[in-house]
Each structure stands twice: as structure tokens, then as C-alpha cells.
Length: 384
Image 1 (cartoon, rainbow, N blue to C red):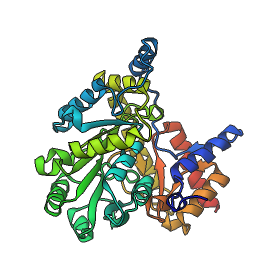
Image 2 (tube, rainbow, N blue to C red; image 1 turned 135 degrees about the vertical axis):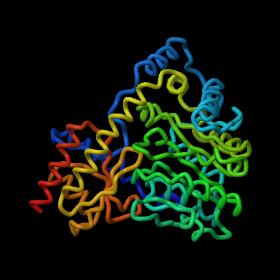
Image 3 (cartoon, rainbow, N blue to C red; image 1 turned 30 degrees about the vertical axis):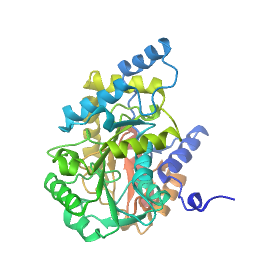
Image 4 (cartoon, helix red, strand yellow; image 1 turned 90 degrees about the horizontal axis):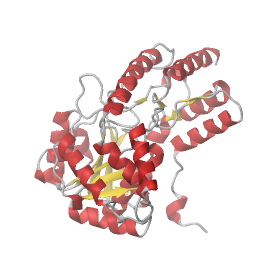
């Protein structure tokens, strides 16, 4: 007999699609995968060497629950250096990936009946985490370019509002909340006394003239209400290493650390030493990856808009395109299912992100695969 808590949780559509596509590949099928958001670059050599050094140095025992002091210090210095936000080491928590950080936040802050404002489209796990905390997701539509404004947020505020989830650049759309709107949202949060969970995992993946700022940098009032979640997964191509981190006020971080002490205890210490090198070592690998993704972004945006039945807003950040497929007459589930079985191309149905008119494609894939995949989509639609 299962608990009602887990009975009501939907599986991750992104991971399910990715698993099915990889199984088809394993069986010998030539599948092009636009599924899970995972850089196709390898973890940089200096980071791997740091992990090997940790193993050779026998750093293989338990660490403090919240992470090794050196890594917490490096994270605090990163916030000061890159985001102009000052945090004490006690206000930093290291966890088992960005998803774990966000789960800890939801469990520590939300309670039964609380409301969490969730801009649409949203990353698949936000809604499920809110529900696991017995809170209520309040969906907030964005504009035709998937941009969120303070006015949209204000319409959703009630006396039960406990938090807003802000993901900029966004998964799945790549949209960035404009700096002026971030400032207005900060004022709303301060005036109405609700938390802002700022998921900044794609902060380095910003293209063209677009600008992204951390809401925590806008003054002490909003900083005290902001809980920043980030990780090394995307920035340093370390998805499998599972190191995320959170910054926030002492009360919240301590509560999250207590929770973590009874769930996972400390993250992998080998991965922590790798993450320490990632944050403090050379950063050229990040710039190289961003340049490559920008080239792919421009190509996929142009190519998608050349396919009949599909239209796409230009992504501003992250590494996803979120095209509208309503012109094909199919729902996102039908589109994704048929495309995988008939054309061997894996995409994620938009219904998982709150919009059945869209699909998500990750362009964190080789240019060769992007070209082949889009050619297959066009040919498949012409034959459908």
C-alpha cells in the first residue's frame, strides 16, 4: 500500500523520454536525442584530475552534512565574484545536485495549504516538489515570448502565497526575465513578504545582448527573502557528479541541512573536491561551451521556423528550444510519441512543462545530430 504522497507524483517526462530513446539506441536504432538537458561536452580534465587526486589522497570518508568547508567557501566567493552577493559560509549548503537543492527548499519552506507561484512553462519537477510538500502550485502565464513580468506575478498573489519560483534563463523556453522586471518582482516579494526561489542553474548560458541578474543582488530586503539554487552540472558538464548548492538566510539553510542529515547525509566527497576545482580553476571550458551552444541556438531557431506547422521563439538563454507545434494538429504527447517511433527522434512533450502546444528540444547536442534530427522532423511531417 503506497502513500497518497507518492501516488499523486508524475514521473519525470524528460528522464522517461531519454531512457526510452537510449534503450532504442542500445537495441541498434539510430536515434537522434533532443531529450534530457545534458551538455554533450566531457567534464574538463582539470576537474577529473581533482577527483582522482581526492581518491588517491583517501578523501573517502564522511564529510560534514552541508559540504566540505573549502567548497562552501568557494561557493560564497563565487556569489561575491559573479553575482555581487555576499554570503557567509554558514549561509551555503552543498547537496546532491540542483534537483536535491530545490527539493530541500520545498520541504523546508512549504507547508500544507501554502501557495507557490509557478510561471508557465516550467521545469517538470517544480510542480511535483510543490505537491510533495503538500502545497498548492499557482500557475502564472507568461507572454508570447515566455517572458514573466511583475504584473503577471502580482495577479497571482494571495494571503497564502509563500513563494515564487524564478528560473531565468528558463528551462524549457530559454526565456530571460528582464532586469527591470526582476527589480519590480523583488519589490513585490518584499512588500508581500514571500520567498523567491531563484534557480540560476543556467546563469552562464546567456546569448546576444540579453542580460540576466540574480534577484538576491538587489538589496538586503530581497536577499533575506531569496533562496538561490545552483549547481555545477550544466556549467561544467558535470551532470553525473551530482553536486548542487543553495544560498539563503541562516534559518532556512540550517533547516535544509537538518533535513539533509536525515535523508542523504553529505554529498559524495569525491564529487565535492571535483566541484571545488570547477569553481576555483580555469573557466575557459565554460566560455567554449557557451560559444558552441550559441552557434547551435541560432541554427536550430532558424531551421525550426522553416518547417511547416512549426514556429519557434528565439531562445535567449539556457540550451533549449520550445517550438509551437499546434500547426501540425497534434498534441505534444502524440507528436513526441509518433516522432520517436516513426522517425527515431526524441523530444519532450510540452504538456510536461504546462503547455500541450509545444515540444522541447535540447540543443546541447552535436551540430551533426541537430541537423539530422531536424531533417527527420521535416521529412516526417511532410509524410504524415
